[in-house]
Image (cartoon, rainbow, N blue to C red; front, side, top):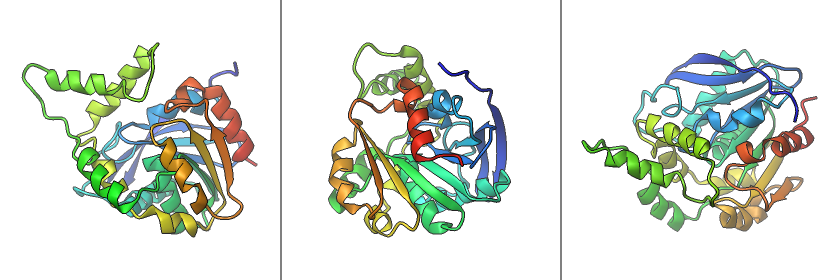
Length: 267
């Protein structure tokens, strides 16, 4: 097992609030890492520590240790603009690569449209392109996720049990607890989903202006990813990962390090 590298943390001021960033120094092209909802940058920790390049994992506004955004509802376009502000705050003047997961994948796609001269290439985990009907249905189901405190603590029990979804025993209880903490730290866990299910991803995927790598694990939206494969631009690198699940950056950290180095080389 390669040696785990130390991490630093920074708070970056943006127009919508302070963003917490886990920073891994190194040599080569910087990599921005954008997490899924309702997680935080901590989901990348095991893999990020193995990388030799500069890698910056952001807590999306409203998640992890970042501020809640100063606006009630943000769009994917606004989240992407915020990522660009963070890149500026980190002093990333040259081109950088972007790795995004689920919500972070859509942020990466939009960031490429927003700043194609600054984004060298993007890699996304899953391809969350939903139909209009799915977006309406899932908006009702997921965007409404909130933590309403109950005197007997039953709201915490429900949140804890939900962290076992899409996973099979034997469970990594330490990781369950990390995901539970991510969830309860969020003032509105469904806030990122409100942006996801308001975003029409299909035309943005078809017209992506930078090279794309898609990692396709066997996660909770695997069927949607497979269905959306026909949308990707010519030249896209598609990597099927049928043995990898939703926790691929923790359970299969070394393999993901190797995939990142191969498909997003730091040179």
